[in-house]
Length: 68
Image (cartoon, rainbow, N blue to C red; front, side, top):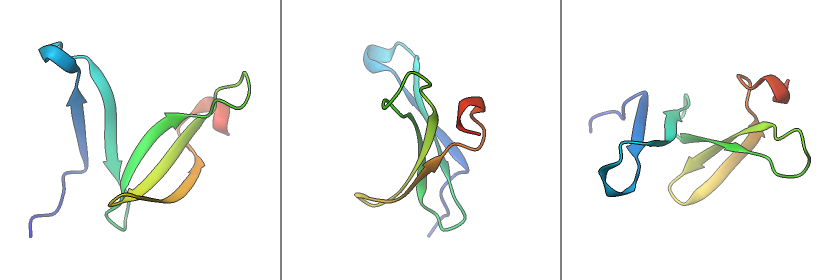
């Protein structure tokens, strides 16, 4: 089996080429989706670690200035 790339990009609809999301992979091979927390006006960044169809870990995005 070929290991997944370190990062892949999804393009927008209708061939617009707009970047919708950059997906990274953690040490265990889970996809790391970057999202925004909607609970307050700070809009901190979140990392959602996903294996298959299951979110296994949700934590603050270490690279997001508001999440520190």
